[in-house]
Image (cartoon, rainbow, N blue to C red):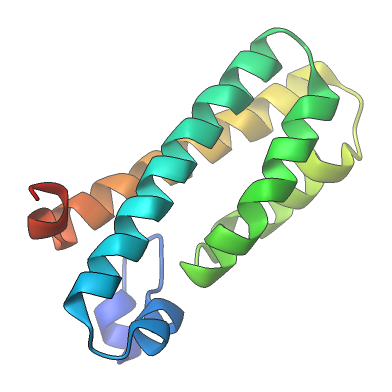
Length: 122
């Protein structure tokens, strides 16, 4: 995929396009599964963070890593690593990371909905 096509997007679908090999049905399925899983995981992370269950937040962040990598969400690599390993025990810092995670993932999901409206209107 041309890098200009990814300009300004919070994700890079190069890996996903390679996996789906021009199969629009498979592409749609991967996008929907990603969207559903990430939406659910972020809800669980927010609940756990609100309750101060940082070990659970770390486990959920770890679970998200492969999906985020496949969808080229590189801006969250450090956020996920810090949540996963909780390099800081400061709840204020960890909450800032959760807020950043929310913001970026909302941008990713919004971008996918805008780029592939037909997938979300099936």
